[in-house]
Length: 54
Image (cartoon, rainbow, N blue to C red; front, side, top):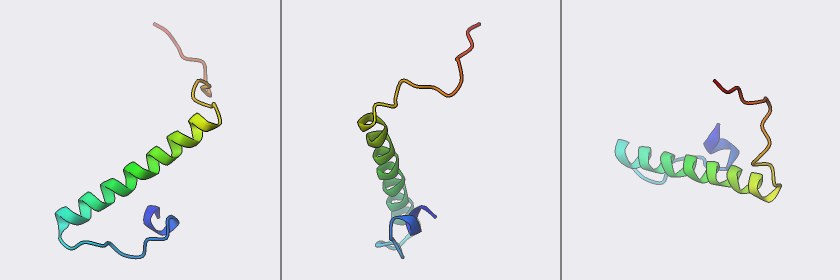
């Protein structure tokens, strides 16, 4: 789903290690994009639930 959502139809490299690396970079870019969106919308400090302390 991650590849399909970003318009990737196939891997650019061959071999298990190269595909693993490419997929890792794709996931990293996805997470950075999500983090940037949260920073831009100033939503970092808001949690859904109150944190419990021991």
